[in-house]
Length: 379
Length: 97
Image (cartoon, rainbow over all chains, first blue to last red; front, side):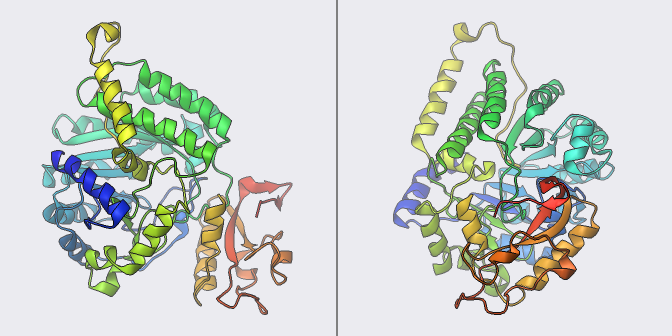
């Protein structure tokens, strides 16, 4: 983690001056767009790609070395990939990430715990975060996710994964909600349920238009006032609790993120500089490298450069896209990139530091109860 | 978001229409919320495609873009967009372009 913090000034210099050249610390992989959900907020499941094989992924990870600290294995549904354990083993062998983050819709609840166990066993020095999607309580979840019985599978999967935590100290179980116009009115019920089951972390993300998900132009984002109403309740819930240890830091960042989303919706610009294309990136199923999943504009395809990520990342094509991002030709509240952006933004880090310091004064927090340890993250 | 609308209007390669419509054909069979496709015109004044923007098509019957007579020398800027059941008003597509 100290190594990551030491990279922050270098990323800031890289974004501003183009030097020193840095590989991303936050990398999202989308091995396949296939998904067994039929969410109202996502159309990725309709896509079919000429997907990279495990051998091809292995060459990519070899070219990255130890640069990425945070891997997210996205999708589609990541656990539909029969080689997900081997994929994690491959990037663990070459990259030794600190964090492996995998979202899931829980529909393969009979298979997921065994796969997660395999990942925890074979990646012992990484924190493995499994984020279970939850967009409503009971039938509301099933309606938004487009599959009957999904909520039941969620509960089954959650219970089985929480049981694994007794054996694997590197396992974190989170719950992740997408706040859309389909559930924003029910947000208090959703938050109450999510907090009641006591996951290690609870994170929300706003439903937004993304090229990756083929949702551009679709009316899925909640109205700004309704989102503000909902997220203020979540912020109040978080701020009314006392967190211990590193959780003080992660929860302070999370509140900063929710406030940042409100500002982005209101101001419709990059409120803080975006580091997608410098510190974070995504590799899509067919080998294309993107700065992020919102723009999903291909820098180059790894297949065209013998799977050498550096030849993509340090190419003139990458620089053209960076210029567009730096010039604020885009903006979005994507959580995955936003947490990296906040880490690179000194005023945000200062606010988090001050909040953590205040939370550490015992007299100010004597009536509050400690909460379980949450972790940062998107997806 | 307007900047995203502009991005999806970027000129397309020759295989774009077939790829996109194949995706939506699969979407129609997949028991999701997709109920058709529409065409997002390259710009709101495009003389060739603007009149198509209000209609919803089944993927097999959608006009192939680029349409004949496309005025964009650098390539057609139209795009297919999904139409979802939750966008329908009285059974018709009612979407903002």
